[in-house]
Amino acid sequence: MIIRKSMARKNFNSSPVLKNMRMFFNHYIIKNVLILILAAGFVFCGTLIMLRHYTRHGEALSVPDVKGLTLVEAGKLLQAQNMRWQLSDSVYVNSVSPGAVVSQNPEPGSKVKQKRNIFLIVNALAPEKVKMPDVVGLSLRQAKSMLESQGLSIGQTSYVPDIARDYVLKQLYRNQEIRKGTEIVKGSEIELVLGDGLSDEKIPVPHLLGNTLFEARETLTKYYLNFGVIIHDQTVKTSADSLNAFIYRQKPAAGDDAMLQLGSSVDVWMTVDETKKPDIIQEESE
Image (tube, rainbow, N blue to C red; front, top):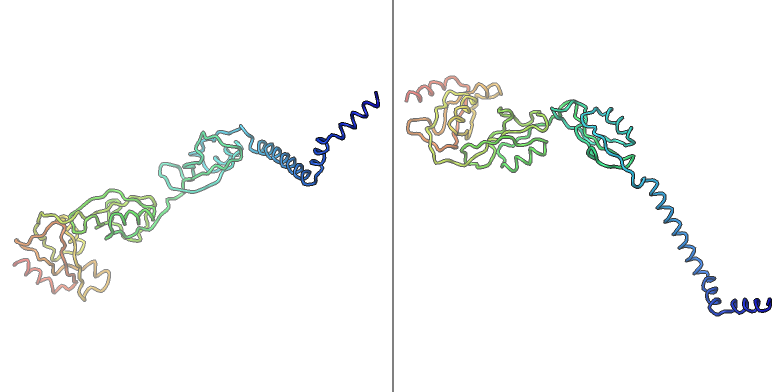
């Protein structure tokens, strides 16, 4: 019996198939490949386990609403929820208390993982100011682009007869003309007066002699006319002179038969020389 078993084992061990398998697995290249496959498998399984543990798969937190809270209050609430926070920007909003959170990302109620960064935008303590650009003479499209680059926007627009259609004739803030370089709250709306092309309607040329530039501008505005060339004589040397100077000549001159199309321009000559006033009186009497 023992002899039969030993013979059967000897026959099995001497099987060609078994010999080939042993030779195959004993080959050093095959051994290395198998070791690499096993190692890769262990690494892959370990990575999955670690990622599952790190990301806490299936667990999510609801983002609390921190809008209206101070930065300190919002930070404490988020930290209590095992979340992080980061200040991303500041703006100025009249309806929100200074220093309070204006907006957050992600929004309240969003589902996030623990340690997630919540980005906050707070209301500035004081409104940010920018310098007003000069958009007079630009097209509406150019003016819009320049204003937006400064953080401003176009408010109400109005049109008056003028040869320069859709070009800015005046820039206003709260119904008052605003000069280039004036500091203004960022986000403000700028009102624009635009040209609407020349009208076929005609209007008598207004009498401007003796008026200061400010007085003449008000008159021309009522008549839907514009200044053309403004010429100062040699007596106008300082800014004070410019304010006190009066018109001693205009073209076209005022008269019963003098008519202009709406939107047309009037050229004026300015002086502070009082001796030129008799000429004005003479022209008025004529």
